[in-house]
View (spheres, rainbow, N blue to C red):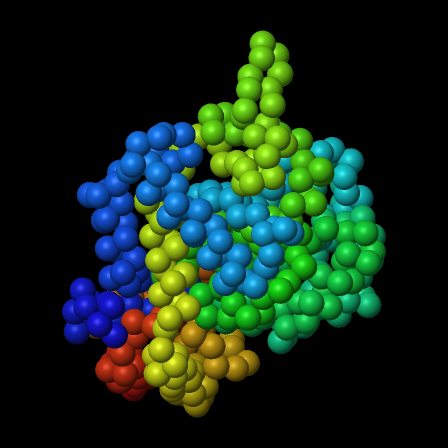
Length: 388
Ligand SMILES: Cc1ncc(COP(=O)(O)O)c(C=O)c1O
């Protein structure tokens, strides 16, 4: 694809689940901010600052539209990454708000550890939900009464999705619980699963959505009452007295996003993320078809090899496997010698992959829209040689 014109023939990048490659329009938008209107947002009256403010505002609106959510119900704040967003929320819930915290067995360390720390801090039990092999949750098996639930919408092992996400959210709410969705792996290629959701909060990373390094939090306005501000500073207050302050988020519903944005923000990255959302929305059907054909072909090849143990049950841009008799880290090195950039190990899902499944370290191919047919040829050719 011409938007990835900087990629040479030799570079085969299969690590999009970690960070997508950024298309030209996103890189150009970031450069434009630095060269044409470098300025602080939210606080300056000069023309560059006004331009920055308008573009940042557009990105917030665009994010909500991408998920088909209403600004009456939700707001968008920016932060560092998904991990930071989840921790920012969990660290600010008032003591005593929940009777327990629940997460699932297939989580990335980001929610897995944050819920562990939350349970310890709040001195409440933590329960691990066992996800079905297809990623869904049997809601009847769990009691969500007054629980805080933090689960992913898609896994970073093999892309399996929380297929019954709407049912899960409804059941949690009916029991008086609160649910935060880790959408780090869901929003680049499977955004529809989270559209019109009623989750209490959604945390994601722009860098996994063809955007720059940036965290995104989409939070229900009516969740704010459960928080106690404990991470605060510039950009968040309308007035400050000797020993108290007035939060802008409390004084003006249009500034509610400031509740989680302390200090100066990554204005250029936020603006460039708006460009990434635009790019994803305008992506031609042919690019999506090529993408699907490419990852399906690679999946089918891996699935057909008797010595390859593929974790995926079905084709997905993210696929993990190990090869019988071969050390995955050595395989990763050999792939790298051929220009193929793939991940090896447990991809921050230690609990499930190592301690539940007892898998050896894995190899992960995670594809993005930049992948060419010739990359798949090369990967298959290289694996064929390894398999002898
Ligand atoms: C499912 C999932 N959740 C959370 C994260 C953490 O994302 P970040 O490192 O951007 O905070 C990742 C990163 O790979 C992920 O795949």
